[in-house]
Length: 149
Ligand SMILES: [Cu+2]
Image (cartoon, rainbow, N blue to C red; front, side):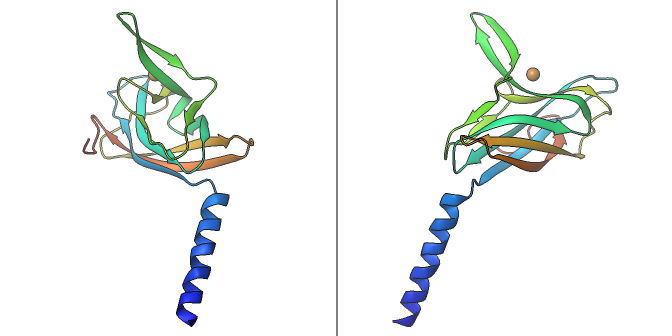
């Protein structure tokens, strides 16, 4: 009976931990390389969270201005806009930031982004209760996505 009892306690602890903490997972982060004197670029990734959160702000050391953007068709025109209210990440749903859709826009670049470099990006999330959580990701610099679709 003893081993069974131990495993039941373990299961109880695991489920308690997963309901209390907001676990946010960021995968496949990459940033598009630039040519000399280029002023702006984009960063892309997949974000999944156990609880519903909002991506509210972004910061990097390589850009003076970092924004969360959306690209979408309005009639026949592709338009880009800043999501000043943040980007919703519903619970247990992977939100993909990709070319032609949501992306992080890095403007007023302070340096060239070269292939093979790693760009640290700090992502700030807020949950429904206003609790903030910061996630640091290392984005790979690449001309196109270095990850398989
Ligand atoms: Cu943009």
